Image (tube, rainbow, N blue to C red; front, side, top):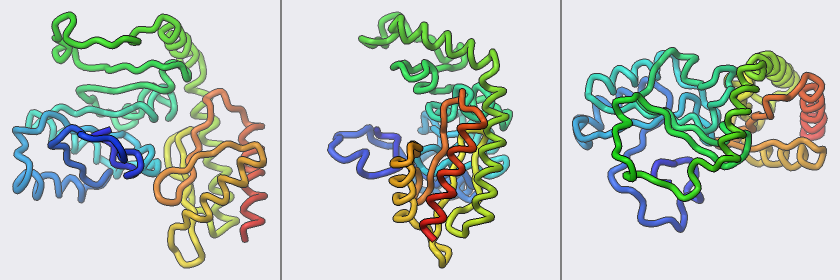
Amino acid sequence: MSLTASKVVQRAGFRSLVPAITHIPYGTHASLDYLEQQLFLAMVPPQEVAAIFVEPIEGEGGYIVPEDEFLARLREICDRYGILMVVDEVQSGMGRTGRLFAIEHWGVMPDIITSAKGIASGLPLGAILSRPELMTWAPGSHATTFGGNPVACAAALATLDLLEGGLMKNTTKMGKLLQAGLTKLSEQFSQIYPPRGRRLMVAVDLWDGEGNLNPKLRNSILHGAFHRGLLLLGCGKAAIRFCPPLVIDKEQIHTAIAILKNILSQEQ
């Protein structure tokens, strides 16, 4: 809760939060310039920073793909100052982007990866992966009542078998089909921006006729899709995210695109 900075409603009612956590804008070299040239020089001594947490693709904030070399540069900054690089793969991991973890697309090795959600196909399970030299805790120094639930662990093992057995390949194939369909919609309707993302982690922004983000239209489309049997989620200021099950097939994608086309036609 202390790390999230997506919506203030998610923090409301939760106090006290962990202190001395600083947020910077996501995904641009300008934000890393600010980190080094402003934050580290005037506010936060880099030698006192324990870790930098980052999503390889921003999730709740809008499915934003970072600029080229952003993650590699962040890795270099962490190495230079002795800061741990922690990658949050809770939403982007477990085959969602066609790789087991999204960070693999950039060839960057973090110090720690956090995983959950897809790791057990919906059953409650989370995991922390790290370099061995960081996992030197004495027995009993960290525990959880429900950690290691055997049913959830069995689901996670089955999930890994499915991912390695073809689901990641299906994700790549269906992701291309989904993005092609959304691209075609963006060419037909001025309200929808071309898609962004990787494989089956995709989003589109909704616009008004004057080049402004249009959350009202986004919400109307979400509502209309729900009543037509298509379940979608919003993200960012005015984006719709597409994060279907990795078992999705081409007929289901064609159906989803057709439903969206029908809604957009009525919104014109």
